[in-house]
Every structure is written in structure tokens, then in C-alpha cells.
Length: 95
Image (cartoon, rainbow, N blue to C red; front, top):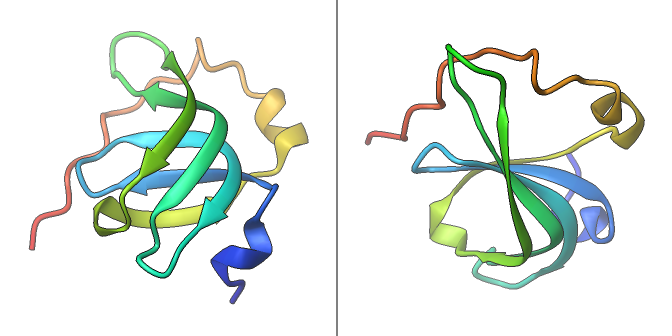
């Protein structure tokens, strides 16, 4: 299992507890697992239309709102036509 520090300067995907998917380059992490992403964007899923991309730029995600963090293969990700991907929105985490 890779630690978050090993993902610094790598392209990552973060799923938040409120069901958002934010993708970008991980630039920093602290002891509270707050993340700093650069060149980030949110991917908004829909069953009717393709994935909408909302540009965020430099973005901070609070550690208590993070559900999953994973490294993304940039080459494979670039080959995906997000306009053709139809999926249900990610539900929020319920405890």
C-alpha cells in the first residue's frame, strides 16, 4: 500500500464523502490528510449526458471529506472520451 507522500507530483483521483470526483496533480498533504491538488478538475457524472468537466485549478480538499485517493494512469485516462461515458452520480458516504 502506497502512502500519500509517495503520490506527490503524481496524477490522482480523489472521491470525496459528498460524492464528488476531483482529479489533479497531488502537490501536498499534511498530518490531517488535507490535500493540495494542482491543475485539478471535477468530473460530474450523469446517466443522460457525458461526463461534465469543471475546471478547479489549484484546489485544497479537507482530509475529513476524503473517501478514496488513487493514482491515475495519465496515458489511459487521456484515451477516455468523457463525452461518451454515462454513469450515475457517485452517492455520498452515509455512516
